[in-house]
Length: 97
Image 1 (cartoon, rainbow, N blue to C red):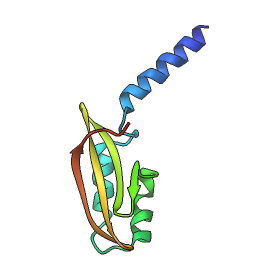
Image 2: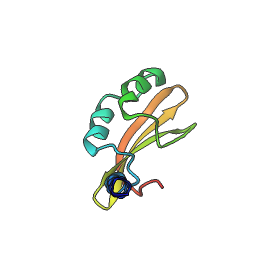
Image 3: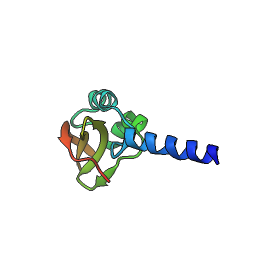
């Protein structure tokens, strides 16, 4: 029983630390942003970003990864133009659920 309570407490603590940010750090987002540039082929950009794991959000216009930052999150957004990177930015954002 004590093991179950300890495991539940550990799970709760870990989810509080990563809640909504996917477990990434702002430093990881900054490093990833620096490895991707405009007009880079999508395949090359995805290879450079693979250390972040799968994007939290993705559609035909781009991909986003999130990191917890205080009470909110920072979002790395990679805008795509066809099969090329259009732009990258890191901005304050609401955390994904």
